[in-house]
Length: 142
Image (tube, rainbow, N blue to C red; front, top):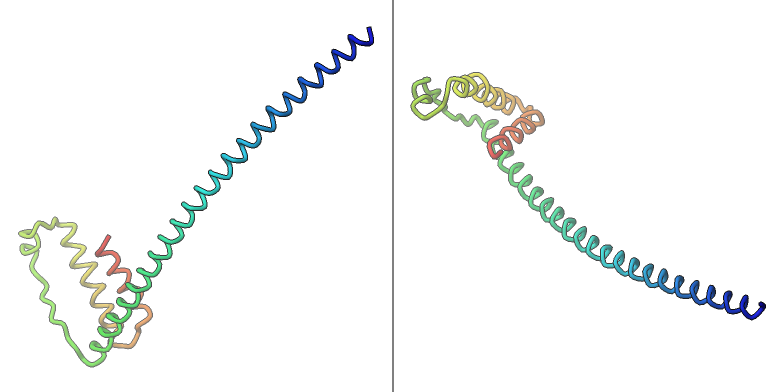
């Protein structure tokens, strides 16, 4: 009876060792997969960070160019520079494919905003004009 009990305990012990070994292997595989996933995620993050830094550099260059252009325009306006704008009649715009709503915006919105911006430049109110000019420039490229 004691020998049978010893055999039974030895079998249980072997089964437990086998079970623990299987679990240990599975955990090692999980760790390996997680390490690979981490490496892939890290590489992706580095690529995205580089792309964002490149975008930032590009935007900074564009910003400097726009600021330079803006200050050149401001200087010319303050020197008395004039830009003769001929407001075209509605028929001109219609003939060029604009609908009534777009024509109304040009007359009441866009050209008015340009007049306000030029007036602000003439009076040295560059901070507000700067914001409006950037806003208008970005709106053209959307």
